[in-house]
Image (cartoon, rainbow, N blue to C red; front, side, top):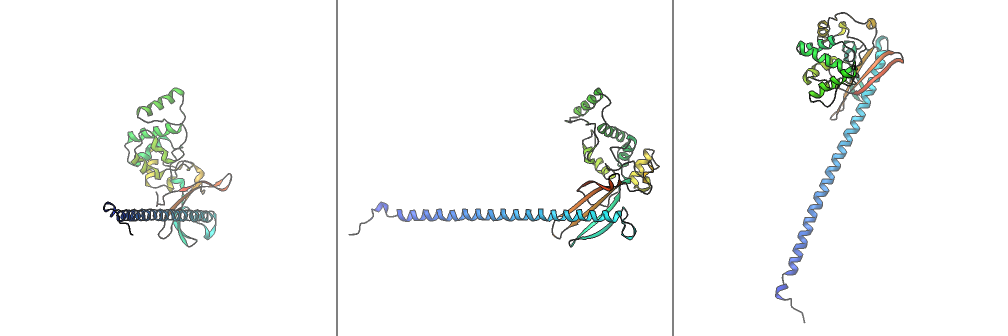
Amino acid sequence: MKRRMPPENRGQGAGDKGFALLVVLWSLVLISLLTAQILASGRTAMALADNVRAGAALRARADGAINEALFHLLSGGTAHWPPDGSEHLLNAGGVPVAVKIRLLDNKINPNLASTALLAGLFQACGAARAQAFQLADAVVQWRSQAVSQQAGQSEIAQYKQAGLPFGPPGQPFNDTSEMAYVIGMPPGLLARAEPYMSLYQPDDPNPADSGAVVRQALTLAGQTGISSAGYAGTQPVVSIDARTQQAGGPEVDRVAIIGIATGDGPYQFLSLKNGRYTNGP
């Protein structure tokens, strides 16, 4: 004889099955969301890896183009490329690379320039005369050792009074961007002056090769003549800029600073880093 379910339990089995189905459906939704997130993360990681690989390949091509441009710079005859800023197109593994070679004898070295020449540059870039000399003095103070312990403490106190947590290190600049830390240096003025400076320029600029801004700086400083006979027929320091971009991929700009005819050999790499490919001053 079949046992009948009590009236109070007759709907319990159906309710349990409905609840179990709801749990299963929510579990499937959760698993689907996790799967989609994992797939999306995997695609993002693959895209990042592809960009890193493409960037590394482009940097290698740009560096190879820099070495090829150096070969042409040192070559004679029709293979020679003069350091006049002209653009040369090279093919590196099917990828075009644009290269420019510039002579740096038209740059001002903030580690070597006089107060008058630095002030002339700041004036040529828009600073008033009093501000220009104040900034030039601060630049020289930054790169030079204090004449005495008392003077050094006074310089540090001046920076602290301006709310800066540092003082002049008494050492040459390692990069022109460090000039942003010089007390009172306006970012806009530095941005305008920086293209006309180079830490690798071994002497004051050659007026014959300089642009209007540097010539104006030299005139304001009273330095209208060539200050060094070393420029006669020589190429002391050059920059080689290389730019390449793969279709649909990242763009890579590389800049090499190279000393020519140094004591250690026919050339010496002084710097090789990412840069900005521009027509330049």
